[in-house]
Length: 144
Image 1 (cartoon, rainbow, N blue to C red):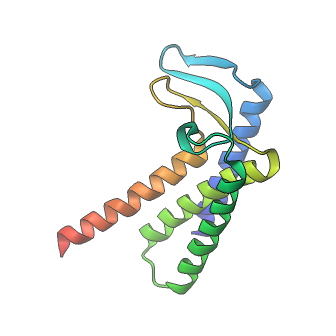
Image 2 (image 1 turned 135 degrees about the vertical axis):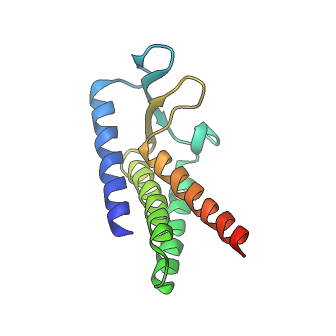
Image 3 (image 1 turned 180 degrees about the vertical axis):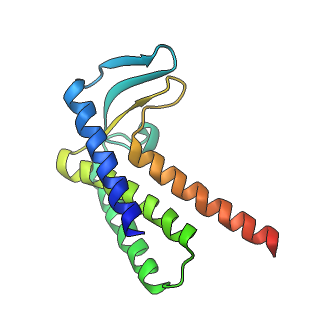
């Protein structure tokens, strides 16, 4: 789990650093024209830019969430590897975006498919971790 957290944070922060050094806020560069662009967005809201200017509240929620997740993972020592990995992705994604909120006052988003709001690697990790957990729950119910 800790490796998933570590690598998620490192990948996320490195990618955000590169995107911020190549682009200015609002600038967009086509990697695959009409499909994949790098677009630098400073997001003070939640995913997809909902609740703009809620940075302080979102930072507090993230800190509480990470504390609860850490407590649960410490209490449940017998988590299967897939669940540990999923929790690591979720924690790493939350921590990556929290680091931005605390350091910058906004989250750096830069991956832009033009049909979806701009996002980052922390968002991918959060989503992938949640999907894996939901998938494991659904498979577990089907087996029972």
